[in-house]
Length: 199
Image 1: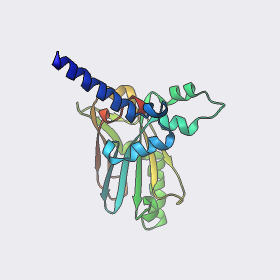
Image 2 (image 1 turned 120 degrees about the vertical axis):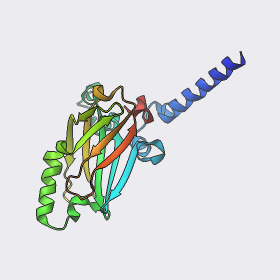
Image 3 (image 1 turned 180 degrees about the vertical axis):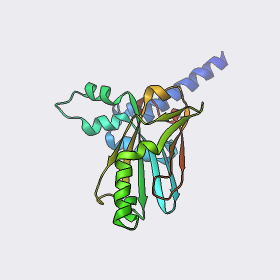
């Protein structure tokens, strides 16, 4: 009987922590700002960072709810936006050097121009995902955010099919050497570090 009471107590505490982490105890869901804060907190395991050749590469899980929040407008029903983004997992890769866009620090216009082409059109050749069962998956899509030197980093949105990795609790996102001189990079992630409020 005491064992059963202890088990129930543990389940209640776990449920409370899950609800609190999703912001449900506060107001039903996390705001855009709260989501970004949660994702960028290293303690939550959703953001990884590596540095090589002076280039910092930051990879973050990017909840589809953030994409919905960014695009939400009175003319687009929220359920339609959820359906649009709900079938994929999104990750933001950020490349920076000396606090600036990494492609602006390559030395000359020729290298800059080449890297714009790589980031905009050829990253499918350099990025993939490997699961704990050794399956290798290509990106379903990606998007390069061209900010023309107005940002402190170059951002790529990496998109993977949710169905293809729904059973993989651990996986690696691999970024091969693409022109920054970083060599091959591997970012290991655990799917259990995000929950339904961040899907």
